[in-house]
Amino acid sequence: MNRALELLAKFQARFGTSAVVYRAPGRVNLIGEHTDYNDGFVLPAAIGLSCWVAIAPRKDRKLVLVSENFAELIEADLDKLPLRGSDRWADYLLGVALTLEHDVAHLAIDRTNLALICQLSENQFVGARCGIMDQFFSCHGRAGHALILDCRSLDYRVFRLPPNLQLIICNTMVKHELGTSEYNARRAECEEAVRRLTGVLPGIRALRDVTLEQLEEHRHRLTDILYKRCRHVLTENLRVRNAVQAFETGEIGKIGKLMVESHSSLQNDYEVSCRELDIMVEISSRQRGVYGARMTGGGFGGCTINLVDAADAMEFQRRVAAEYESETNRRPDIYICAASQGVEAVDLDGGLAAGSKPGRETRGNT
Ligand code: GLA
Image (tube, rainbow, N blue to C red; front, side, top):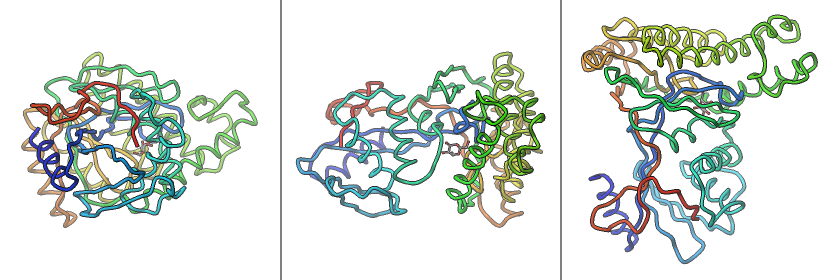
């Protein structure tokens, strides 16, 4: 709340008008990596680390964006927006504005459509061919819960995370340097594999539709690399389903084992890990109270996710930080997280916020 009031005060000082403050959480994926754009399954939770935005309508056709992180002001003319981004932090916002302009401005937008609009903006304007996972969970997150999402039908199921379990995120402090190009390359490889397999499996639309038996049977149609990429996606989808079962029966040890398998599949078959991610996972796995550790997200740097017994969380944080720094000379950020609620308008006491209340549908407004 303090954060929202602080943001609002800064907004008022700069623009001389009030604003609505929104909070959009990040997400952490427990398991199911590089499966979303293959119409598969993912199992994330939204987390308390959030992006805070104060926003107010203007009378002219300008979009004025200020970021505290980048200390920069960007002004864009809504009638002259480019069709592609230019590798700046504002790209995503401009892309969303453009998508809303072309499509759905002034319509009430439900959370799933909001996520789809944001994904489209990433895909078309920013140029990252990401799946639906990040945006969907930022919109649909539920405090204290994880969700399994079927990325084809967008059906999802919510289940409570055991209260004695802590989600801990370790940032390797390695930027996803190769991120976008390698990510897009992986996606293209999956699409190429589907193209080759449709010759013998005409019913398939995505790797989601292929079984491991079929993959083995038609392996000769694929290069070794394509085969490995497919093997990761297919086995990862199975791991997600097994993890859900294990959560439901309270077998946390099993989830840990699946996380270990997931990391090794991402490392060896999908080849999206890196030295620092592997070191972080290795150090984390030998700590007390750890059920499972693996890289999370797109890879090539970024973070790991760890399921840790709540009683051991602080000690885990301290030890992993020290050991990782001594092995890599990088000081990691380590966050002990709680699963949080999805995007919401922040209710600022005393009527400071002009309008919407948490949980209301979000309205498109460029
Ligand atoms: C990135 C993308 C997601 C997903 C993950 C890998 O985070 O934005 O759509 O593909 O990588 O699971």
